[in-house]
Length: 440
Image (cartoon, rainbow, N blue to C red; front, side, top):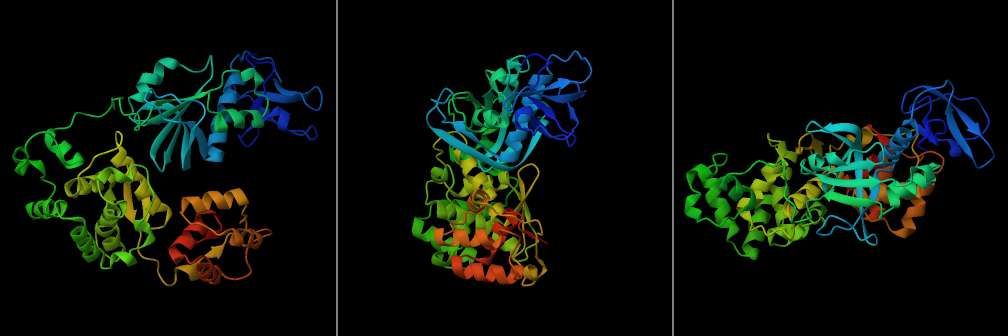
């Protein structure tokens, strides 16, 4: 593949990367080299061997490799997941166990804080950078610079590019392979330092992480100009309450007894034990402080993840299981509220509270005329909105969208599904939106 005369991948007229071996042999088509942009033609020796070749002689030694690189990024963007090796203290996996990273949107060949990266996605666990390492294209000296961004960085190597002849080969290497991947940095690898973070003053550390080795008297008035003294006292009093009293305070804050708290207050997230209480308590605190009041009409609807962390650090003792475990837990929780329709994500880890669903909301929704639903699509979308669908209802849902969409209105369909799945309207609507089945 190193030669520019024979290329396994090229771009079609729509700019998509395609594999020569996956294309039919009939019909004229125009393709372009991913390296120089020049026109290439599809050549086929037999039913199993095909390649692209420049129409006009061109000095394009890296065209084949650049096309392979572009194809790998395209696969990541389309599949919206990658299997990654387990996290260990040296940043490398053993090649046996794996974790799955998933995302909705991603940016290809972009810049993060001014640093060029191959792939950047916002996952439920936080920002993720992916680098594709192909010999002759990849500059390994950039690893330290990319580590310094302070985000999780996964490096995927393609050691034998000449053996990658189709999208099936590439899919196994990029999406499913483990032995060719390493974590250059991850928040869960505790012994690494977050290079790009500025040094925090002791007062800021106290606000973010709750406890420091210095006496509390050192953290008096200058500690928190962002919050009133009365609120500080209330938070300090809450922090020392027994669990039963904390529950009573949260019940007053939410206006409901704990047995009637919404499902959004019991979300399974990584690092959920970092706040030394049952996760439902700190999640109820976030929901009652930042989400419920704004949803019911309060003027303040926007907040940042850092604001939430500061609020929790004043009210709970934080003992993270690994570095930044509490940040990952909060970020995953806020992203879960986003998929469930309570929040919408804004740039720079900001969130906006969505108002409670209006009675007329469903009546304005329409079916997407191009709606289709597959088994894998339903599995992924239901996982994102945290909805467990019984096996006897899966086929029923698939049948509805086999050749179009249900004959009834969206409103009628949602109400029927609410009864069958014993699930609130908000979650059903979130599922339909996540699967792109409705518009409006």
